[in-house]
Amino acid sequence: MKTWIVLPPLAALSGGLAVLLDLGRVLAGAGFEMELVAREAAPWLAGEGLPSVLMWPAHQSEPDFGENSPAPDDLWLVPEGWPSLLLPGLRAGARTLVYVQNWAYLLGDWPEGLSPTALPLHFLAVSRPVSWHVTEMTGRVAPVLRPGLDLDLFAPGGGKGGSGPRRLRVAWMPRKNSALARRIREIADVRRARRGLPGPEWVAVQGLSREGVAAALQGCDLFLATGFPEGCPLPPLEALACACPGVGFGGFGGWDYMRSPEGWQGAGADGLPPWLPEAVRREAEERPVNGFWTADGDVVGAALAVDAALSLAERGGPAWDRLREGGRRTAGLYGADERDRRLTALWIEARAGRLFA
Image (cartoon, rainbow, N blue to C red; front, side, top):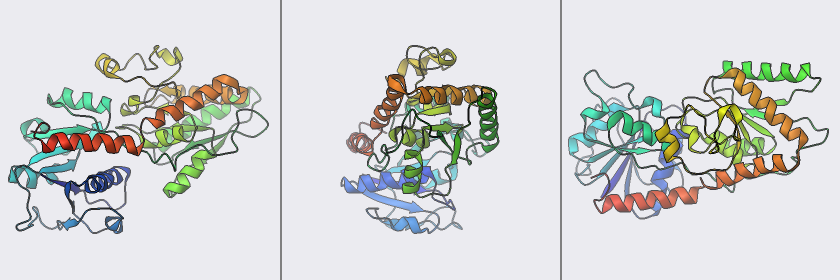
């Protein structure tokens, strides 16, 4: 069984593309036969530990790999949202697998008359909520393969405390629904000003290397999540790993790990919101409380979350320490080692014909 991971033609190295490269690196290191298939040449294709790369020129509707072509027992893996990349695997009769990293793109961009349910496809999901969505939309089971954090890089830094005269710092990402993020900031700042309290320092996390992102999060007290839709959003997880609790939107996929204090905007004892589908709640795994999370697009709710978390940070003490520790414990469940073990176990099952068959 050979695994073919098809990389879409993206101008920049996105988070989803980095995840695909990581999968190739892990599978090759575990001894699985691997090929990366790229539509465009890019500098990140020469990364350490990556398997060989076959080029599928953008001007060709289908690649010509000669004798090195997919076989029926192979796995042809494509990210969601790129139906045209499925064709070579389907034509070869290979086991064609869609790795769904964002639920919102599962049904999008399909040619008229085609849909995921009309083709012999298998699915892999990046989180439990995404797996539920895939099954709801296609009737097919989607095993969960979560992303893997570098817990050596994303770890607590020094110099942060919950009390004292230091101005608190809130990290945010301008590329994630920036207009809504700015409204949240404005409301949170005004609420505090009306009580005679200083607003936080807002730290924009953008244009940084992974090391730069880690350093920024280590120097902040909170992380404002404004992305939606999301499959299993990594930036809030990275913040939690840095002992930087989160506030804001879940993006639906974020409810794989996001948990609020009981009673916060209707959250139950499980830390999940009351409007989450019952099946998702039932399948949710236990996680510690790690932030003040809100419904997607709820600007006022997110501003209240910022205010509540800042007040808790200013008071400090055991409650604030528990929130920070809850974030660290949550992130510890999403380490790269755990992802690698899960990936290897899934591929052993696939090689034996017990999965994606």
